Image (cartoon, rainbow, N blue to C red; front, side, top):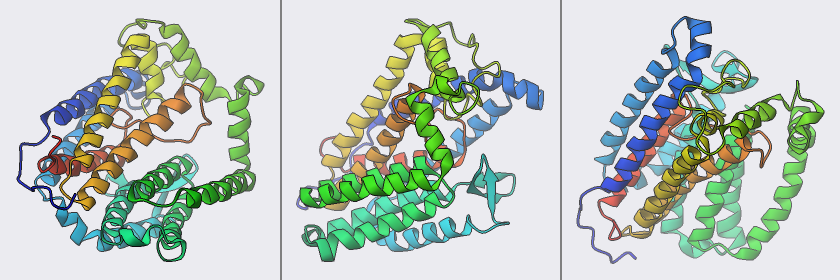
Length: 370
């Protein structure tokens, strides 16, 4: 792989079209899902839509700037980037520095806006692991010298994220890192042992926090507590069900009338399904599949090991977030509190994902599978 030509090509236009399509759908759906809530709270139906448009503009600018930076540059600064991410993760836990929203201390205020350090850690870990695994692949099959040191790093970041707490982002971090370890050649039996420990650890996390037990029971039988822990998933299903094949029409959602809590955030896919129906939801999922396909092609076609792992890591991060979010919305897994990439309202997540796509676009300029 190291001997492939590194001639610069045109960026992957197909990938860029997919990203802009998702962004446009996201802005429209944020307006549709939030207009009633925004009118009630801010007397401006476009309040969230305008801010989402601003976030998207900043994110697109970041995407195109990052796309001009040779991806090998990130290899050079992988360690400083990871250290900064750890500093931010620790800082957000300090009272007076970290902002508490929805019971989680996950944000640091920056002027009128706020950043979410856990979002940056996702990309920081991908860059560092891509560098480490590209340079020291011979150690990855060694439990003592390769696998365990990386696990310590991964679980330290996971632990800091869980102190906020943010289980959804923590899951994405863990699963993305495991995919990179697997692709880099880690032994299967190491993953088997890790899986057993993971089950015990997950059980410990659930037992240590009563609200997680409530989320599990609500997932198994939400109608047991329809006005409490099961309320959100029930309202989500009430949105998806009436949508039928073609939906109720754009802007005609009933669940956004204060039934589904903050429908423009984690549960925006429920509004998509309600207004655009099974066909609209399926077309959206197809766009995400196309994004996955292009990302995998770009990663596998990269001219070096670092580019391959970096491309596959970014693609995995975005895809896992999509899978987890939609699985929660349709009731396949318990509520984790994670956004739907490119669609859910939010600044840090959208900007970070678009910047990550910028790296992927740069890799595509050197990929022989472009």
